[in-house]
Amino acid sequence: MRREAERCVGVLPAELKMGDGMENRRKTGSKYEQIAARALEERGYVIVERNYHCTFGEVDLIARHDGFLVFVEVKYRKTDKFGLPVEAVNYKKQRTICKVAEQYIARKRFAKTPAVRFDIVGILGQEVFIYQNAFSYAE
Image (cartoon, rainbow, N blue to C red; front, side):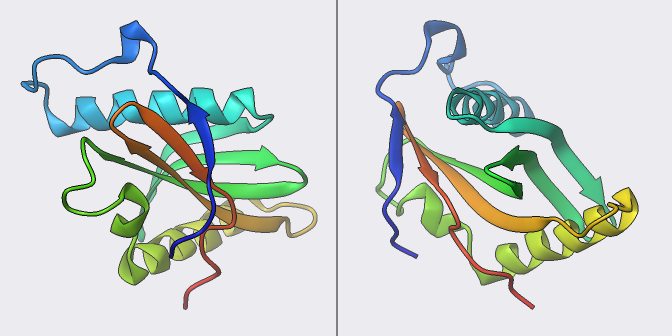
């Protein structure tokens, strides 16, 4: 899954930097999803949903960008010691995101089926990378 990514943020804003490591996973995830949403918005994405849940699973962000309905997975790693953040989005997670996307589209009853794209925002330390069209629909 090594694709070219756009480096978005050199240094995270001070108010979004992590504390002493005592924060719980949900709070940590929420903080990095906020960082990802900000980076996406700065590049023209319009966030339409955050933490969308259904019976199939959850997707971190849903946005509109360049005519696409974009389902975004956000992954954070402090270091690359255990791999890059993007590498954590394995085939099983991709399938889950695709099922959630199908369900979201069905529930919203769009007049016309939107063009869909799957992006990943990887945050490694203090750097943010956007991988557009990071994977194809997985059955």
